[in-house]
Length: 321
Ligand code: AVI
Image (tube, rainbow, N blue to C red; front, side, top):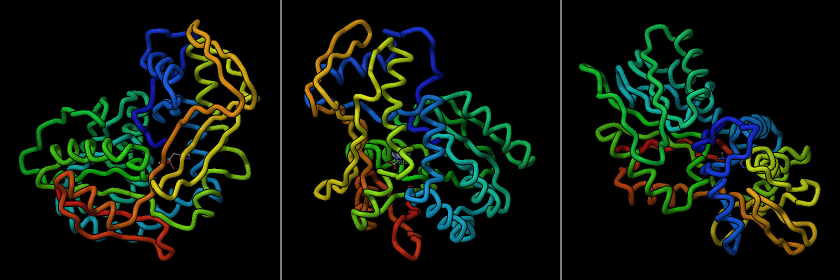
């Protein structure tokens, strides 16, 4: 899972007091209706996201893995000996393994994630496979200031790792804020950042409208989750997955569109939807290389090398903190 500050485990009972409840009620009360994509990632949503990463149309994951495979040696050189890696989100074990395998003697790996369970699982696997590595999971919201352990005596540079273009799910302001916070904990080191690139809209459209309907199920899982956790009564077959590329803002937008006029109850409160009315569930910004570098500079980073695939679908940036 990309671990975009994923929510905690499913709960059987409606949790009217949860952050999800508060944000969903606020979203339904506001026009246009819009909610943070972080609520996609309960356990069902995280599994659906993993399935998305395997889809033939969803090029980012396999393209980034290809780039990381190519640049890992150079990254290891740039990082230097005894590097301390801070991963924002306990994401794909495959990606972090590519870096760890290339590094001479990485000293410490610190994944930061809101979900303790997710962290514990990946930490155990890495401890087993890298016996010399100090695996130090940190439970916390990496979009806010997180408390990391003090650098080890004789330790190397602090290298941040934020793959998957999860930065594209932030608003530009949130992205700069995240980069500023990351820059503070990485000062003197660097950030290795994956960013999806602006490209042929047909390629983008297909990636978010896969023929197997997995992205649709991922989007609709938000309503299913509300049914499970908030005692909501969304009739899932009355909602359409709608994703499109918006070229002026260079982003994919995902919405859930009401197929008819209907009333929904969430946490005991009723809300009306007209036919065609939407709940905006996600933005996925796409970047130019220069645009991403400018964003990083705004947050105090100094851009270093950038690696891309031959088709220029995806980019991986080394940013000096
Ligand atoms: C996690 N994130 C980078 C994905 C993306 O492409 O924006 C989430 C996703 N949404 C639909 N498909 C994948």
